[in-house]
Length: 493
Image 1 (cartoon, rainbow, N blue to C red):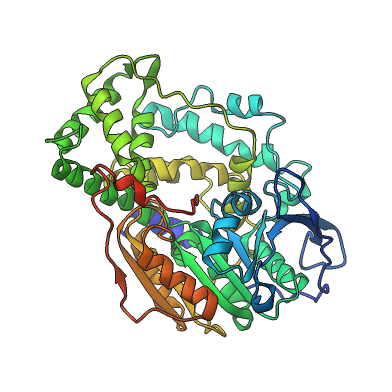
Image 2: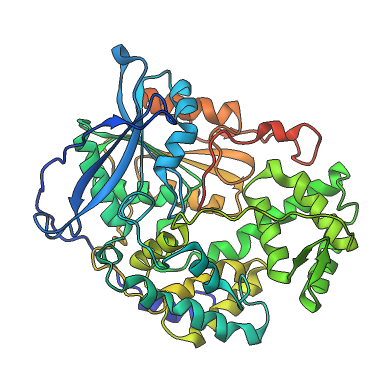
């Protein structure tokens, strides 16, 4: 470890192994049509043990949907999806991408989305009674503290989530990724598959890696894209990656901006540094919008997710830099989909973060030393400061040999799950193959024909790409027409 604070943090982590769990039997799914708004899809729910240590005790509900295979004669089985988060809805992901994914895989899979326990339609954890109450939680604090005076109020507000979310909600005690992996194995059995086929993006890579190590003999095909290093994630040390990954992508954004003569150029790095200094000194008014320092950073973080958005981001940063008037980028209020609640319910169940403000502040300094983006990623973990971990969480070992090879896919420049995470998992899992994309963005499936063809061949026939395969980058995202290379399948961490 490179700092005393992170060394102390690492000392808090206890490696646990999952307890033996009695077999509750395969649950039954009563499939029904999802309604006229989702033609061709079936929806269902199953009951799974709330606590897998007590399989005949209380239950919780897992909701799922599927797009049945169109080629029933050559049907392989079910392909389970996870879009990331944690907190992302697999049901919504299947509704939005299931048709396209089914066609890409020749109609040979039932495409199955599911909302992991505590998320979306699956007995959702609700920390707030309404969207209005959720918005009130964020009032008076920045997106992350960027002045010393903001740190304690931010920490105290986020720390209060432990009490707000856990009171009188049994699901809050059982939202670890290990619990979700056990549910997933029950789902595999419920659909009648002897072994699992799985496609996970971003945090979905951690679920996939967890499943592969808890049920290594149950793998038919498991592809993970946008990969978290499970050692860092499960130990609370993901900040070691986050403090530099977004900066690496943003430096590429600036370099390629100058190369393509984008609006922020030709001296984009100097203009960015000047913009940060100005925003930290005083919020910037742009039309009817106010951009504080944390909002400017949040805008730049977007470059690590979506290269197709680079031209729009460059245009906005150019206008902010010039303090131009007349631009409004107000977004519509989202529905309360419990993503924020579920994200913290899962993360705090999995990871033992420090409890005291002094450690958060010290690690915040470490994060900031990595780059201006480090604090953005670190401080929200304060939600876990008063939230006990789940005793059934899984923290390794991560080196089990699986019954079929695992395909690990990573982008060279991914601001949310950096390439080093994919390299680490490919080293950890002895029966795996690394497929690399030499470009930018968060996840790679659907971004290039090279990546997509290799992943489809793997999912269909468990055919691995040659060792060392690197798919070439798409053209500079700042160039006209480059947005056509936007990914087909969106994910979120």
